Image (cartoon, rainbow, N blue to C red; front, top):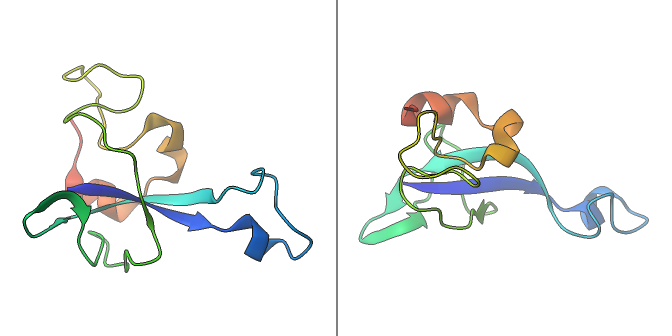
Length: 99
């Protein structure tokens, strides 16, 4: 499985220049996608909720069963970075499941 970020480009979203993200893309939604065949961690063409992954950004790799700032194997470990917990796609979360 691969985690991908649906992002908003602040330069495109704010015609006057960079938005409040300091010029970096803002994560709007966190999705999960099946890995591309033979390429672990590389997202396939569609997320579990059916969205196209082409314009999404791959999340930095995390060790299996570990979210950022949380040791692997701990109860409550998630497939996504807990920093973005409020932006997780509910359909992808249902498809992946959690501990």
